[in-house]
Structures are given as C-alpha cells and as structure tokens.
Length: 271
Image (cartoon, rainbow, N blue to C red; front, top):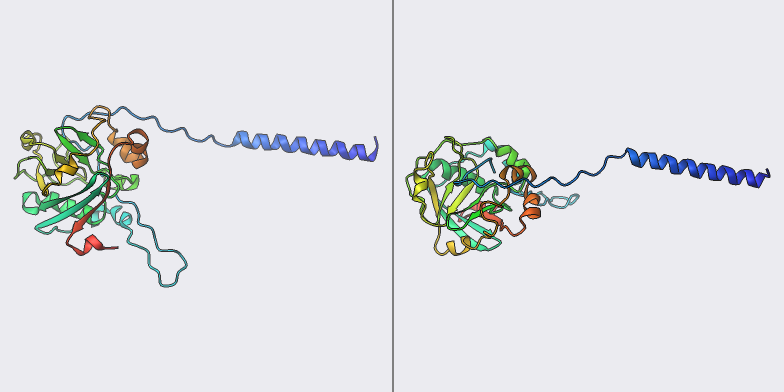
C-alpha cells in the first residue's frame, strides 16, 4: 500500500469513529418532556377555592448603569405572606384594568374586616395583576384570584384566614372571598356576584361580601368570557401548579386582569 493510500485509509477510519461517538452521545441525551395532559375540569357547585392565589416581577433597571435602581419587586414580597398583614383603611377603592375594560370596586372594612385587610394587602402588592377570570358562570358569578405565577400560588396555598360572618347579602355586584366546605378556608380567590345570590349568605360558613362594584362597572364585569361554562373550564390545581401558560393553551379566550391597583393612595402610583 502506498503512503497516500495509507493516509486515505486512516482518514476514513477517523471519520467513522467520530460519527459513532457522536451518535452514542445523542442517544444518551434525555428526551424533551412531553406537554402535560390537560386534566378534566371540575364543576364546583358554589364559589369555591381549591387552593390559594400574582404579579409578574416588574423589569429591573438596566444593569451596569451607575445610580440606577431596580423597580419594586412585588413577587419577592408575595413569597412571604406572613409579612403582608397591614390593616386596611375603613374604606378604599381598587381599580381593575382588564382585557374587557376598566371597573372599580369600593371596599368597606366594616362589612368583613379580615377579608378587607387580606384584599388590601394582595392588591397593594399586585397579587392580582395578570390573573385570569378563570371561572365565569353565566347568571351566577365571575371568579378570579389564582396567581399567574406558580411560585406565588405555592406560597399562598395554605394561608387561610378566619371566617368573617356575613353582614351584607350577596347581591349583584358584591365581591366576596371564595371558600371550601371547611371553616376558615378563605385564601386569595374572590368572586363577583352576577345576580342576587342570597342563598350564599347561609351556605356553608356563609359567604361574606366585603365590597361592591362601582357605578356602571358591572357592564364590564358581565362582558368576561363565559363560553367555557362551569363544566369545561380549567382545573384549579393545575392552574396553580403551571400558571398562566396552562390557561392560555387550553382556554385562550378567558379574560385577564392587566392590573389591580389602589386608587387615591401613594400605592396606586408606586414604582
């Protein structure tokens, strides 16, 4: 065999070895995880909360700029619920900017003090920003309060509060905390009554309204997409675990809260 022939044979051998090694490496790499199967949606008979409910972190200032400060990171504070126990004003207003428009809610602390305090702290720290109106039952309720951020949902999952006894009836436009069938199970989920629902005043522990939609705001609330009904909607547990991408994949028509802010306080313009 000539020297040139031997060189060619060695080159072919080296190329063959490289191909084999590269093939083994690829076979040893893990396969990409398949998308989780969408669970069957449950249809609770009342405004229920199977778990506890965001805010996306606001973008930080550009790194490297001298003297720049990051914007407020509300998610970091929401991850420590025990610190969010500020007493609410006797009355306060919350403005909701949604995919259907804006509406406002006036909260009266005397109606349900514990609920008013919880709602105040959640709104102040932008818990409801980007959250979906994930359960809309025509002629009954519009429900929201599960965070778009799974880490925040996990932090609030077992942060229940004691029951406020109902002092107001669940009439059209009132907002009330959802609960399970157990006592002291209210967390972060709330619902707005689409009609007068007096039976909720006495169901279970009694659902206690703590505020009411202002003026013509119900015109916006009643526009929330209800095409999925109560039997084909999302599973609350999976929504908590997977966050907003879970909703947008399986229920893309659901409406969302762009922001929920306190009106007339320094917190409404806090950066």
